[in-house]
Length: 335
Ligand code: NAI
Ligand code: NAD
Ligand code: ISE
Image (cartoon, protein in one colour):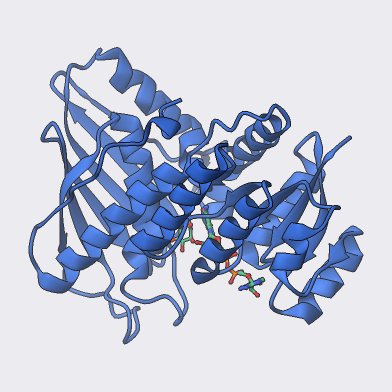
């Protein structure tokens, strides 16, 4: 029987994941949905033949839901993840796991108390072929030791609800997770520079921002976050090593030669740029839930990301270099 998934939050990414689960993923179907906007939620439920729940908590408790997907706004993630753990149900939570360190810690503690890995966080870049190739190269040591990384995370534009802290907490959080996975090292310090601003930003958003992280072995990482870059969705990661450099290339199926020019398309958004990564992420999540052995980014990874984003936010607000101190990873997450 298919795994019956209940989805909380049916906005941009919730709808995208629903289509993925029902159309692409094998072994799963969306059985229930919930959204704070009940009119839109009910309409979607009738279109896909799912049951609508006005309250996320009722969806989680329902016996037509085997596993939960949380794709609602960031501040709502924690309560739904904790509720799913309470009901001993597997839960996939879009990033960030919670908006504050304490919230992530409550989830880690609840999961350890439940005695079973139930939580996976939506850090889909670990499933992107480009990052996988970077990791294989780094692990092989063919280019010697890693010394520096130069990264960029550019979105074409954001709306007025996107503010200064979100550049770190909602956007750079992807680099923060995937680079730690790539290097297998934690961070020891963070700095954030606020360069000259683009005229395309708004009052509550300093755009762009420039983040500098240092890892345990001294690797220096710079990340440009520029969310009103206008020209497209552009992700860069160049790993500089002792004997060479390995970098992501822009995924593209074709190039166009015309009128004296040779050009390739730039992705328009995250849905397009990471489509294959999301597809793989969901297939592997469903397979691992069915096998009762979760292998993807854990609640601990969500917690470490939050410790790091909090340090970045402090660095930005104080204009200083902020040290990052992490307690030892619990044995529960080393299994
Ligand atoms: P959105 O604003 O398009 O959708 C959020 C939906 O959640 C809305 O339909 C809203 O009505 C609903 N909602 C909010 N609070 C709710 C509640 N308490 N109960 C039920 N429904 C509720 O936002 P978007 O872009 O879909 O982002 C959702 C989440 O996904 C965010 O946490 C974001 O960080 C994450 N995300 C992750 C991406 C990735 O690449 N992994 C890409 C885009 C978003
Ligand atoms: P969105 O605003 O389009 O959708 C959010 C939806 O959640 C809305 O429909 C809203 O009505 C609903 N909602 C909010 N609070 C709710 C609640 N308490 N109960 C039920 N529904 C609720 O946002 P989005 O762009 O889809 O982002 C959603 C989440 O996904 C965010 O946490 C975001 O960080 C994450 N996200 C991740 C990626 C990624 O690349 N992994 C990409 C986009 C978004
Ligand atoms: C969004 O929530 C995502 O997760 C996207 O991957 C990211 O590029 C974007 O900046 C976020 O707002």
